[in-house]
Length: 383
Image (cartoon, rainbow, N blue to C red; front, side, top):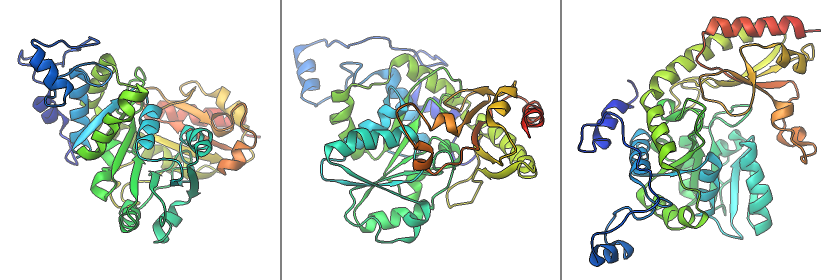
Protein backbone atom coordinates (compact mmCIF):
# COMPACT_ATOMS: atom_id res chain seq x y z
CA UNK A 1 0.00 0.00 0.00
CA UNK A 2 1.05 3.59 -0.53
CA UNK A 3 0.90 6.97 1.18
CA UNK A 4 1.51 5.48 4.61
CA UNK A 5 -1.84 3.67 4.74
CA UNK A 6 -0.59 0.21 5.63
CA UNK A 7 -3.87 -1.03 7.04
CA UNK A 8 -2.65 -4.61 7.28
CA UNK A 9 -0.07 -3.46 9.81
CA UNK A 10 -2.65 -1.35 11.60
CA UNK A 11 -5.00 -4.33 11.83
CA UNK A 12 -2.28 -6.38 13.47
CA UNK A 13 -1.57 -3.68 16.05
CA UNK A 14 -5.13 -3.16 17.27
CA UNK A 15 -7.05 -6.35 16.57
CA UNK A 16 -5.28 -9.08 18.54
CA UNK A 17 -7.84 -10.30 21.08
CA UNK A 18 -5.45 -12.78 22.61
CA UNK A 19 -7.00 -15.73 20.78
CA UNK A 20 -5.38 -15.27 17.38
CA UNK A 21 -8.62 -14.31 15.65
CA UNK A 22 -7.93 -12.92 12.17
CA UNK A 23 -11.24 -11.04 12.22
CA UNK A 24 -12.16 -8.87 15.21
CA UNK A 25 -14.94 -10.25 17.39
CA UNK A 26 -18.31 -8.51 17.62
CA UNK A 27 -18.94 -7.62 21.24
CA UNK A 28 -22.72 -7.50 21.02
CA UNK A 29 -23.70 -6.34 24.47
CA UNK A 30 -25.46 -3.28 25.83
CA UNK A 31 -23.51 -3.04 29.11
CA UNK A 32 -20.43 -4.27 30.94
CA UNK A 33 -20.33 -5.37 34.57
CA UNK A 34 -17.67 -4.99 37.25
CA UNK A 35 -16.07 -7.45 39.64
CA UNK A 36 -16.09 -5.14 42.63
CA UNK A 37 -17.60 -1.99 44.07
CA UNK A 38 -14.16 -0.36 43.97
CA UNK A 39 -13.70 -1.11 40.25
CA UNK A 40 -17.17 0.23 39.51
CA UNK A 41 -16.50 3.37 41.56
CA UNK A 42 -13.17 3.98 39.81
CA UNK A 43 -14.81 3.72 36.39
CA UNK A 44 -17.68 6.03 37.27
CA UNK A 45 -15.21 8.55 38.68
CA UNK A 46 -13.18 8.44 35.48
CA UNK A 47 -10.16 6.76 37.05
CA UNK A 48 -10.27 3.82 34.62
CA UNK A 49 -11.19 3.38 30.97
CA UNK A 50 -13.06 0.07 31.21
CA UNK A 51 -16.11 -0.17 28.96
CA UNK A 52 -19.33 0.50 30.82
CA UNK A 53 -22.17 0.98 28.32
CA UNK A 54 -22.25 0.55 24.55
CA UNK A 55 -23.92 3.92 24.01
CA UNK A 56 -20.56 5.49 24.83
CA UNK A 57 -17.98 2.71 24.61
CA UNK A 58 -17.64 -0.77 23.08
CA UNK A 59 -14.54 -2.87 22.26
CA UNK A 60 -15.55 -3.54 18.64
CA UNK A 61 -16.29 0.13 18.08
CA UNK A 62 -13.07 1.12 19.84
CA UNK A 63 -11.06 -1.13 17.51
CA UNK A 64 -12.54 0.57 14.44
CA UNK A 65 -11.96 4.01 15.97
CA UNK A 66 -8.31 3.17 16.62
CA UNK A 67 -7.87 2.14 12.98
CA UNK A 68 -9.46 5.34 11.71
CA UNK A 69 -7.30 7.49 13.98
CA UNK A 70 -4.17 5.83 12.61
CA UNK A 71 -5.38 6.00 9.01
CA UNK A 72 -5.98 9.77 9.29
CA UNK A 73 -2.87 10.26 11.46
CA UNK A 74 -4.93 11.64 14.32
CA UNK A 75 -4.68 11.02 18.03
CA UNK A 76 -8.19 9.64 18.53
CA UNK A 77 -11.51 8.98 16.83
CA UNK A 78 -15.17 8.52 17.68
CA UNK A 79 -17.76 6.61 15.67
CA UNK A 80 -21.39 7.56 15.04
CA UNK A 81 -24.56 5.98 13.70
CA UNK A 82 -24.44 8.01 10.45
CA UNK A 83 -22.46 10.65 8.64
CA UNK A 84 -25.02 13.28 9.61
CA UNK A 85 -24.77 12.17 13.25
CA UNK A 86 -21.01 12.74 13.05
CA UNK A 87 -21.48 16.16 11.43
CA UNK A 88 -24.24 17.44 13.70
CA UNK A 89 -22.76 16.03 16.93
CA UNK A 90 -19.34 17.50 16.16
CA UNK A 91 -20.61 20.95 15.25
CA UNK A 92 -22.91 21.08 18.29
CA UNK A 93 -19.97 20.23 20.54
CA UNK A 94 -18.15 23.40 19.51
CA UNK A 95 -20.70 26.13 18.67
CA UNK A 96 -23.21 28.06 20.76
CA UNK A 97 -25.83 30.76 20.10
CA UNK A 98 -24.20 33.94 18.85
CA UNK A 99 -21.29 32.13 17.15
CA UNK A 100 -20.48 32.45 13.45
CA UNK A 101 -19.74 29.62 11.04
CA UNK A 102 -17.97 30.17 7.73
CA UNK A 103 -19.06 27.30 5.47
CA UNK A 104 -17.80 26.39 2.03
CA UNK A 105 -20.39 26.84 -0.69
CA UNK A 106 -21.85 23.75 -2.39
CA UNK A 107 -21.70 21.94 0.91
CA UNK A 108 -23.45 18.56 1.28
CA UNK A 109 -27.17 19.45 1.07
CA UNK A 110 -28.09 17.87 4.42
CA UNK A 111 -25.22 19.72 6.13
CA UNK A 112 -26.68 22.89 4.65
CA UNK A 113 -30.16 21.97 5.89
CA UNK A 114 -28.84 21.21 9.36
CA UNK A 115 -27.25 24.63 9.54
CA UNK A 116 -30.26 26.47 8.13
CA UNK A 117 -33.09 24.57 9.81
CA UNK A 118 -31.53 23.90 13.23
CA UNK A 119 -28.47 26.06 13.88
CA UNK A 120 -29.70 29.37 12.47
CA UNK A 121 -33.01 29.33 14.43
CA UNK A 122 -30.93 28.77 17.59
CA UNK A 123 -28.93 31.92 16.96
CA UNK A 124 -25.90 30.64 15.06
CA UNK A 125 -24.94 32.77 12.04
CA UNK A 126 -23.82 30.90 8.93
CA UNK A 127 -22.17 32.48 5.89
CA UNK A 128 -21.18 30.62 2.72
CA UNK A 129 -18.02 31.33 0.75
CA UNK A 130 -16.32 30.01 -2.37
CA UNK A 131 -13.01 28.14 -2.18
CA UNK A 132 -11.29 31.17 -3.71
CA UNK A 133 -12.64 33.42 -0.95
CA UNK A 134 -11.44 31.00 1.71
CA UNK A 135 -7.99 30.83 0.12
CA UNK A 136 -7.40 34.46 -0.86
CA UNK A 137 -9.08 36.54 1.86
CA UNK A 138 -6.79 36.42 4.87
CA UNK A 139 -9.40 38.19 7.02
CA UNK A 140 -12.43 36.19 5.92
CA UNK A 141 -12.41 34.25 9.19
CA UNK A 142 -12.13 37.26 11.49
CA UNK A 143 -14.81 37.02 14.22
CA UNK A 144 -15.66 33.46 13.08
CA UNK A 145 -15.65 30.56 15.54
CA UNK A 146 -15.84 27.62 13.11
CA UNK A 147 -14.79 27.08 9.49
CA UNK A 148 -16.72 24.14 8.05
CA UNK A 149 -15.05 22.76 4.92
CA UNK A 150 -15.30 20.16 2.22
CA UNK A 151 -12.51 19.50 -0.25
CA UNK A 152 -13.70 18.91 -2.80
CA UNK A 153 -17.15 20.38 -2.24
CA UNK A 154 -20.31 18.42 -2.94
CA UNK A 155 -21.96 18.21 -6.36
CA UNK A 156 -19.47 20.44 -8.24
CA UNK A 157 -16.34 19.09 -6.52
CA UNK A 158 -14.25 22.23 -6.11
CA UNK A 159 -11.05 21.56 -4.13
CA UNK A 160 -9.57 23.77 -1.41
CA UNK A 161 -5.96 24.62 -0.71
CA UNK A 162 -6.21 23.49 2.89
CA UNK A 163 -2.78 24.79 3.90
CA UNK A 164 -3.80 28.32 2.92
CA UNK A 165 -7.17 28.12 4.64
CA UNK A 166 -5.84 26.63 7.86
CA UNK A 167 -3.09 29.25 8.01
CA UNK A 168 -5.78 31.96 7.92
CA UNK A 169 -7.82 30.07 10.51
CA UNK A 170 -4.95 29.68 12.95
CA UNK A 171 -4.12 33.38 12.70
CA UNK A 172 -7.67 34.19 13.83
CA UNK A 173 -7.99 31.32 16.33
CA UNK A 174 -10.72 29.59 14.30
CA UNK A 175 -11.53 25.90 14.63
CA UNK A 176 -11.54 24.02 11.32
CA UNK A 177 -13.58 20.93 10.40
CA UNK A 178 -13.64 19.10 7.09
CA UNK A 179 -15.70 16.34 5.52
CA UNK A 180 -13.09 14.05 3.94
CA UNK A 181 -15.51 11.41 2.64
CA UNK A 182 -14.73 12.01 -1.07
CA UNK A 183 -10.98 11.47 -0.89
CA UNK A 184 -10.79 9.05 2.05
CA UNK A 185 -7.54 8.78 4.03
CA UNK A 186 -5.97 7.12 1.00
CA UNK A 187 -5.95 10.29 -1.11
CA UNK A 188 -6.05 13.11 1.45
CA UNK A 189 -5.02 13.58 5.08
CA UNK A 190 -6.39 16.95 6.17
CA UNK A 191 -4.87 16.84 9.66
CA UNK A 192 -1.46 16.96 8.00
CA UNK A 193 -2.62 20.12 6.20
CA UNK A 194 -3.48 21.86 9.47
CA UNK A 195 -7.19 21.01 9.79
CA UNK A 196 -8.34 20.44 13.37
CA UNK A 197 -11.14 17.87 12.92
CA UNK A 198 -11.82 15.39 10.11
CA UNK A 199 -15.29 13.92 9.48
CA UNK A 200 -16.34 10.97 7.35
CA UNK A 201 -19.60 9.56 6.18
CA UNK A 202 -18.27 6.07 6.77
CA UNK A 203 -21.25 4.72 4.81
CA UNK A 204 -19.30 5.65 1.67
CA UNK A 205 -15.74 4.56 0.86
CA UNK A 206 -14.81 3.47 4.38
CA UNK A 207 -17.54 0.83 4.25
CA UNK A 208 -17.35 0.28 0.51
CA UNK A 209 -20.18 -2.27 0.39
CA UNK A 210 -23.41 -0.21 0.62
CA UNK A 211 -24.49 -2.23 3.65
CA UNK A 212 -23.60 0.13 6.49
CA UNK A 213 -24.75 3.57 7.63
CA UNK A 214 -22.15 5.19 9.89
CA UNK A 215 -19.96 8.21 10.54
CA UNK A 216 -16.61 8.82 12.22
CA UNK A 217 -14.66 11.82 13.49
CA UNK A 218 -10.85 11.98 13.88
CA UNK A 219 -8.94 14.71 15.71
CA UNK A 220 -6.60 15.41 18.60
CA UNK A 221 -7.45 13.77 21.90
CA UNK A 222 -8.75 17.00 23.42
CA UNK A 223 -11.32 17.54 20.66
CA UNK A 224 -12.47 13.92 20.72
CA UNK A 225 -12.75 14.10 24.52
CA UNK A 226 -15.05 17.10 24.17
CA UNK A 227 -17.31 15.26 21.71
CA UNK A 228 -17.36 12.17 23.93
CA UNK A 229 -18.21 14.29 26.96
CA UNK A 230 -20.98 16.37 25.36
CA UNK A 231 -22.73 15.18 22.27
CA UNK A 232 -21.94 11.46 21.95
CA UNK A 233 -23.61 10.49 25.25
CA UNK A 234 -26.29 13.19 25.32
CA UNK A 235 -27.51 12.92 21.72
CA UNK A 236 -27.02 9.16 21.69
CA UNK A 237 -26.13 8.64 18.02
CA UNK A 238 -23.64 5.89 18.81
CA UNK A 239 -22.03 3.46 16.39
CA UNK A 240 -23.24 -0.11 16.89
CA UNK A 241 -20.79 -3.03 17.26
CA UNK A 242 -21.97 -4.84 14.13
CA UNK A 243 -21.58 -1.70 11.99
CA UNK A 244 -18.10 -1.19 13.44
CA UNK A 245 -17.26 -4.77 12.48
CA UNK A 246 -18.40 -4.12 8.89
CA UNK A 247 -16.41 -0.88 8.73
CA UNK A 248 -13.27 -2.66 9.89
CA UNK A 249 -13.84 -5.15 7.08
CA UNK A 250 -14.14 -2.25 4.64
CA UNK A 251 -10.90 -0.66 5.81
CA UNK A 252 -9.03 -3.83 4.90
CA UNK A 253 -9.66 -3.23 1.19
CA UNK A 254 -9.90 0.57 1.17
CA UNK A 255 -6.61 1.28 -0.63
CA UNK A 256 -7.20 -1.34 -3.33
CA UNK A 257 -10.76 -0.14 -3.94
CA UNK A 258 -9.75 3.51 -4.13
CA UNK A 259 -7.10 2.74 -6.77
CA UNK A 260 -9.69 0.95 -8.89
CA UNK A 261 -12.22 3.78 -8.50
CA UNK A 262 -9.49 6.21 -9.55
CA UNK A 263 -8.54 4.21 -12.66
CA UNK A 264 -12.16 4.12 -13.84
CA UNK A 265 -12.61 7.83 -13.10
CA UNK A 266 -9.51 8.72 -15.12
CA UNK A 267 -10.83 6.78 -18.10
CA UNK A 268 -14.25 8.43 -17.84
CA UNK A 269 -12.92 11.95 -17.50
CA UNK A 270 -10.76 11.63 -20.61
CA UNK A 271 -13.64 10.26 -22.67
CA UNK A 272 -16.44 12.43 -21.28
CA UNK A 273 -14.41 15.59 -21.88
CA UNK A 274 -14.25 14.72 -25.57
CA UNK A 275 -18.03 14.32 -26.04
CA UNK A 276 -19.87 17.17 -27.79
CA UNK A 277 -22.83 16.89 -25.37
CA UNK A 278 -20.62 17.55 -22.33
CA UNK A 279 -20.08 21.11 -21.12
CA UNK A 280 -17.95 20.31 -18.10
CA UNK A 281 -16.69 17.42 -15.99
CA UNK A 282 -16.23 18.19 -12.29
CA UNK A 283 -13.50 16.05 -10.69
CA UNK A 284 -10.27 17.28 -9.08
CA UNK A 285 -7.20 15.18 -9.64
CA UNK A 286 -3.90 14.47 -7.91
CA UNK A 287 -1.99 17.61 -6.91
CA UNK A 288 -4.75 19.98 -8.03
CA UNK A 289 -4.33 21.29 -4.50
CA UNK A 290 -1.57 20.46 -1.99
CA UNK A 291 -2.20 17.24 -0.11
CA UNK A 292 -4.62 15.72 -2.62
CA UNK A 293 -2.83 12.66 -4.00
CA UNK A 294 -5.56 10.89 -5.96
CA UNK A 295 -9.03 10.98 -7.49
CA UNK A 296 -12.06 9.09 -6.22
CA UNK A 297 -14.84 7.59 -8.31
CA UNK A 298 -17.39 10.30 -7.54
CA UNK A 299 -17.72 13.03 -10.17
CA UNK A 300 -20.34 15.15 -11.86
CA UNK A 301 -21.03 15.90 -15.50
CA UNK A 302 -22.84 18.92 -16.90
CA UNK A 303 -24.52 18.12 -20.21
CA UNK A 304 -25.73 20.64 -22.74
CA UNK A 305 -29.40 21.17 -23.58
CA UNK A 306 -29.35 18.47 -26.26
CA UNK A 307 -29.45 15.73 -23.60
CA UNK A 308 -32.81 14.83 -22.08
CA UNK A 309 -31.75 14.07 -18.50
CA UNK A 310 -34.77 11.89 -17.56
CA UNK A 311 -34.46 9.87 -20.78
CA UNK A 312 -30.71 9.51 -20.29
CA UNK A 313 -31.21 8.29 -16.73
CA UNK A 314 -33.88 5.79 -17.73
CA UNK A 315 -31.81 4.42 -20.61
CA UNK A 316 -28.93 3.34 -18.35
CA UNK A 317 -28.69 -0.34 -17.41
CA UNK A 318 -25.47 -0.68 -15.38
CA UNK A 319 -25.89 2.66 -13.62
CA UNK A 320 -28.80 2.67 -11.20
CA UNK A 321 -30.67 5.70 -9.89
CA UNK A 322 -29.95 6.25 -6.22
CA UNK A 323 -28.45 8.39 -3.51
CA UNK A 324 -25.24 7.72 -1.58
CA UNK A 325 -22.05 6.39 -3.20
CA UNK A 326 -18.81 4.59 -2.49
CA UNK A 327 -19.94 1.00 -2.98
CA UNK A 328 -19.37 -1.62 -5.66
CA UNK A 329 -22.38 -0.56 -7.72
CA UNK A 330 -22.38 2.42 -10.11
CA UNK A 331 -25.04 5.06 -9.51
CA UNK A 332 -26.43 8.17 -11.15
CA UNK A 333 -28.02 11.07 -9.29
CA UNK A 334 -29.51 13.86 -11.43
CA UNK A 335 -28.99 17.15 -9.59
CA UNK A 336 -32.56 18.27 -10.26
CA UNK A 337 -33.74 15.27 -8.22
CA UNK A 338 -30.97 14.99 -5.67
CA UNK A 339 -30.88 18.66 -4.67
CA UNK A 340 -34.43 19.79 -5.43
CA UNK A 341 -36.54 18.12 -2.77
CA UNK A 342 -40.13 18.52 -1.64
CA UNK A 343 -40.55 21.66 0.43
CA UNK A 344 -37.36 23.27 -0.91
CA UNK A 345 -38.44 25.81 -3.51
CA UNK A 346 -35.77 27.20 -5.83
CA UNK A 347 -33.18 24.88 -4.31
CA UNK A 348 -31.33 24.50 -7.63
CA UNK A 349 -30.89 28.26 -7.87
CA UNK A 350 -29.95 28.46 -4.19
CA UNK A 351 -27.16 25.93 -4.63
CA UNK A 352 -26.12 27.41 -7.98
CA UNK A 353 -26.24 24.07 -9.78
CA UNK A 354 -27.19 23.50 -13.42
CA UNK A 355 -30.34 21.39 -13.99
CA UNK A 356 -28.32 19.53 -16.63
CA UNK A 357 -25.79 18.27 -14.08
CA UNK A 358 -25.70 14.62 -13.03
CA UNK A 359 -23.53 13.00 -10.40
CA UNK A 360 -21.91 9.68 -11.25
CA UNK A 361 -20.67 7.18 -8.72
CA UNK A 362 -18.26 4.99 -10.66
CA UNK A 363 -18.29 1.61 -8.98
CA UNK A 364 -16.09 -1.44 -9.29
CA UNK A 365 -17.71 -3.04 -12.33
CA UNK A 366 -15.75 -3.37 -15.56
CA UNK A 367 -14.95 0.14 -16.76
CA UNK A 368 -15.63 -0.61 -20.43
CA UNK A 369 -19.07 -1.98 -19.58
CA UNK A 370 -19.87 1.22 -17.70
CA UNK A 371 -18.63 3.36 -20.57
CA UNK A 372 -20.71 1.43 -23.10
CA UNK A 373 -23.73 2.04 -20.87
CA UNK A 374 -23.12 5.81 -20.87
CA UNK A 375 -22.60 6.09 -24.63
CA UNK A 376 -25.65 3.95 -25.39
CA UNK A 377 -27.84 6.05 -23.11
CA UNK A 378 -26.57 9.27 -24.67
CA UNK A 379 -27.39 7.96 -28.14
CA UNK A 380 -31.03 7.40 -27.22
CA UNK A 381 -31.47 10.61 -25.17
CA UNK A 382 -29.75 13.25 -27.30
CA UNK A 383 -32.08 15.45 -29.34
